[in-house]
Amino acid sequence: MNKYLIVGLGNVGLEYEMTRHNIGFLIVDQLSQKLGNSFKASNFGQINETSYKGRKTFILKPDTYMNLSGNAVKYWIQKENIKIENILIICDDLSLPFGTLRIKSKGSNAGHNGLKSIESKLQTQQYPRLKFGIGNNFAKGKQIDYVLGKWSDEEKKLLVPRIDLSTDAIMNFIFTGITHTMNEFNGK
Image (cartoon, rainbow, N blue to C red):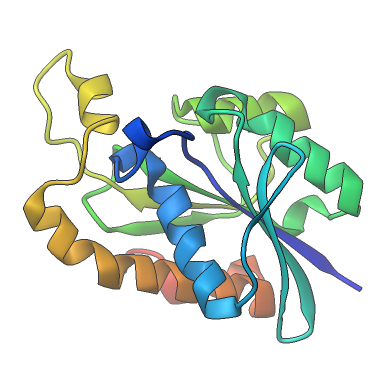
């Protein structure tokens, strides 16, 4: 039976809740609500063991902080014997306009510390990812403040439908695979 690992990247702690960098956590929280079951504390984070259309699915929120996300991903891939093409990493992306989705089957880490960690631990760039655009509306030298900053009031209004679209894309990935999902959801 094929198993899937859906990983929302973020940082643990109250100070990081509702920050742009934690969009991965927000998306997998919504996905968990849609698919049922709830997160439980486990090795390297919070895990929700569920299924979608007969496919065993593990939804993970690593508690390793962003820079060490690869430890959690590698652990769960090995523990559950999950094929690399059946993982999907959800993260923020500064180069995309707010709310834009980009789904890829492989690619560089583009300077994202969570993706760097995963790439290092898996020794490959060949893994699927869903990037959620957070825009780049920050002054020179203020990138970290922007990424770790809270959503603006305007962004908050638009966030719910974009998170919902992201969860639809993830469920499509689980059921139909990466190619169909890229064709269906990229740029939306």
